[in-house]
Length: 144
Image 1 (cartoon, rainbow, N blue to C red):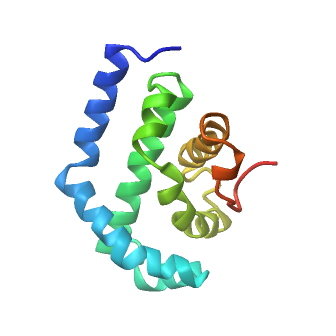
Image 2 (cartoon, rainbow, N blue to C red):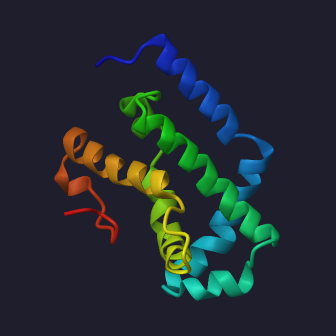
């Protein structure tokens, strides 16, 4: 299915949100604060450093919330996958966030970021089809 002008318009609207001051600040926080924690493999460090109500937690929630929304749109066919996955590398955000989300789910909120994860897995399939299996990153949440 070839993208339409309506699909392009949807992407432009999403991009406006992605480039908002709120998400720009959250992305800067992600790069400087979250990725180093993710590299440790210890999600408990996130919860110790950024408890609910903290600014860091708000940045985390803002980012996963944006991609959760995009995931809902994708799941319901309202955003074209070729435009979406050519524009953003979703797994670049989901992979570092996954251990924290998994720990959050273990605390009882089993539905947290489920559409974000579904979107990340759909992107893996898209990469395999459009770029080749050798370009698919190995991630712990990929369904076999």
